[in-house]
Image (cartoon, rainbow over all chains, first blue to last red; front, side, top):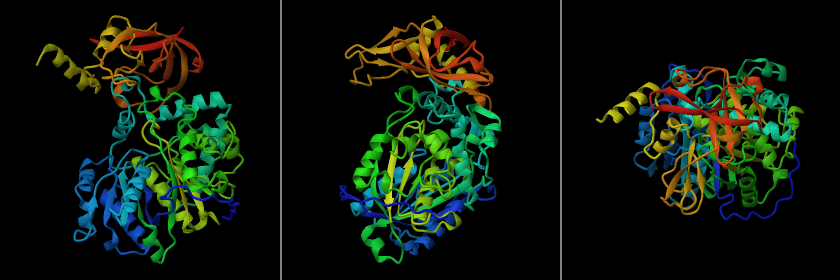
Length: 405
Length: 145
């Protein structure tokens, strides 16, 4: 892939903590179906890869922050009660292990917590890890019912048969109604993501699709067809973060956290007044201001997906497209390999596979890999700065982070 | 265990829904053919679903009032595949799920009934109807108005 984007003139970073914390390595167990593997095996594979990628010893990790394991409460308990410290043999030097989770936005929560610990010298080198087995660790009925229950009002929404496919489609219908975006444009998001997945050895759904093929699959939750819905998988990801000071001493390419913006707005769709915008405009503004950059300075966007509508909304609200124009922008190939704005370059949860709360951690690992120039055939040449976003629950929060080499 | 508590437990086991104590006036209302929501007696904030305290001023002086039950569809989707298995006893695919803006300015999650999937649209006028699911559980849904 050869994509060279113009890098704009940077203003001075305003955020005191801009470029004070860095990600120095990432690891990823492929997304797919691995019934023979325990969640811990998936996690340790990703951790080993992240350590090798960073070129550091496991003994340099002083804080471990695992996410929860959605389908396995005992594995979650192991993570809470410091199993990783023992497996890594770092009990003599480690300072802290605790769980951090906010559904799909967990990666952004982890980043903020890790950055806070590092900048206040409560941690030097933090291991972030997510593992889950949504693909084979539970029955299809469990998954169906879980995605119709978690983050959903039991008393006020569940009786109406709400689930996340329907939630995504309620956003999409209102967005299309207000902006004139077409179903074909919405489907083209899948076309773009599949092209990236085709280049990603860790992705599950590698086959490229046309808009017609996306729309001709069976309708699941109108207007979403099955190919516009995500598929749950097994997998794990890990990222290692440390101080800029330490990162500079290592023989590696650090990726610095330059800015971050956050908002959490609701629990249920019933209380979010505008399903076509949410809080991205103000959180992106906060992140841009922190980093001292604007959309013109961004080379890649690792947008949290889960359903196509959210990628279009983010493109518009963060200043990459005018309102109502993101659909055509994607349809014209601008976000695909070779396009001007590579978007969600691992294929996202819609093509790499949905890891539950860990989908965002996989995307974080991808961001680090891209900016470190280690993405193989899907590497975006000249990628120096990227946006990573996270969303959880009923799209309850809008987190935007900016990373630069 | 009181008869009422036994009934609640049986209901929970059958449908997997635990009802809140503070939401009880709502469900009593649906049994009487009323769609109720809360209004804060101190600041006038209107709330749905049921809250313990006012979401604007944290007052506990909350009153239940009756809605006209009329509103418009803000957005919707239609479930064809993979609905939660636990609702299958009282909800068959395809079903329409919608967010409805009531005249009073509150937004509710609901189903639209008596409407073909291809006929539902954003902005359409709808009115509440009350559907008995089981003894003591009357679910408000909406229909074209």
